[in-house]
Length: 185
Image 1 (cartoon, rainbow, N blue to C red):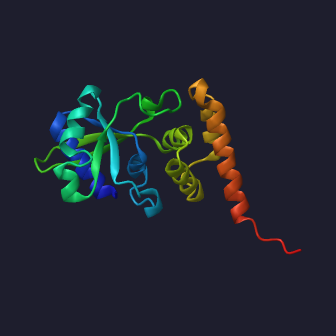
Image 2: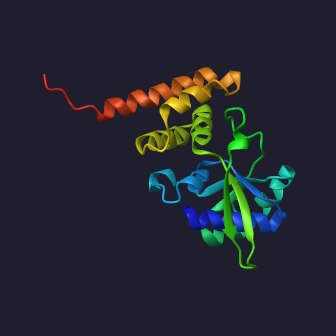
Image 3: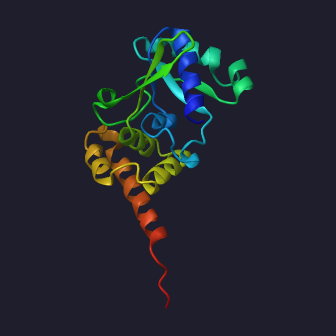
């Protein structure tokens, strides 16, 4: 999903709920990096919820979610989630990045997107293969500061600090090994 497609999802979700929209999945990167590399944009879904009434995420799912006419028509969709979904550092909601999207009526639909460091840490906490691929590409593209990631792990939920730290260090080591020149024996 590219920036234009994300904006389409935001407009549609805002139309459905009459609310600002929070984006917490990988597509949130498009708020800070609208031209992010295609390897970061492989997902066809945007994880979203209404900012002021998260319980209405089901309405988004029903109208423009997986298998909907919207999905069939455009090839991408929204996945209604909630504010409890991301496992991210404390205060992540205060660091959301605002994205105003023009609508046909001349007003803006407002979205709030997970900040890139919070996004990468939530992907590390989830630890699924596609999440770790996203983290690897974000690190390779130098979109995040590893020192800042390491510091922020301390404010992650305690049950996820060790695994998140371990996955981060393994990813950094893997990238370092991959970029090291081959040594001939």
